Image (cartoon, rainbow, N blue to C red; front, side, top):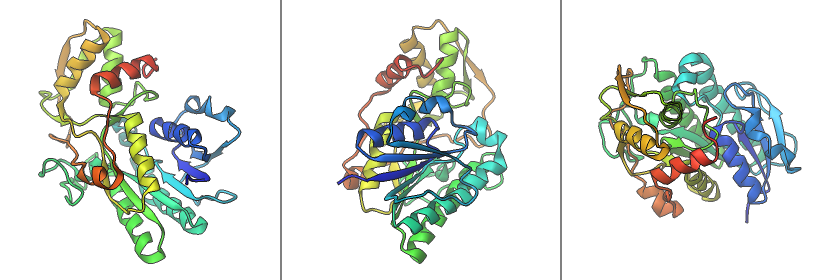
Amino acid sequence: MGFQRAVVTGGAGFLGSHVCEALLRRGTRVVCVDDFRTGSPDNLRVLREDSRFGLVRADVAVPLDVLGEVDLVLHLACPASPVDYLRMPVETLRSGGFGTYHALELARRKGARVVVASTSEVYGDPLEHPQTESYWGNVNPIGPRSVYDEAKRFGEAMTMAFRREHGVDAALVRIFNTYGPRMRTDDGRLVPTFLRQALAGEPLTVHGDGSQTRSLCYVDDLVRGLLAMAHSEHPGPVNLGNPEEVTVLEVARKVIEVTGSSSAIRHVEAMEDDPKRRRPDISRARELLGWEPEVPLAEGLRRSLDRRLVG
């Protein structure tokens, strides 16, 4: 049996809007909570035509309430791109700390299942490869990226504390690099930046020598995993991501191939604390959720172009 009514924090964002859409397709009524700091009303344009969809404009870092019954809370609200969290360091920490607290409090009051979106960034620049959920990470707690990394690590601690102290049906997913339609072209993440540059005929800017690796998961696959976690009884954490590891340089070349661009590749200065390798071990997701990604990188890039990721 599916959920009757869900609250999705950060529902106007890239990932959140896809989650809202998937829930509506499954017959769940959806309340999107967003302050549009990084999300966009354009992502909700079609959804708002559905009578089962509601919007609450609010900052999750202040106390949150939703009238009526709720049986699922999906907490996705937090600046997720480097451009955003480096521009809004304190707001990012507030979302990861106070925002997670308020989402968990809402779930406690409503007696709802709550899934908190954490990130592969909790592993930092990992010394273990691939990354399993038992790995505690290698994070610089005072570097510029720490505002995102530590916000998510604190959010994980808060989630488990609510389970232990209040008996909340809370769970954690650790999301690895995800891409697809509705990403902002200026948000600084790998795929939309490369696609924008390739379509404009500009050089694709690769930080460092490009040998650092990422594991890129198409958004439809990620949403399937997130909702599978919601329907499970497992507390997590569970890694959700694509175990196919590719170098940043390989991604740049694939984007040029898919777009048919004549763009060159230009190497620029490496980013501070940029992880050298990133690849999830998804054994737990396969075993507990029966989930694994299905969309290959080239196909995901083509779908992103067809569905107007860049524009």
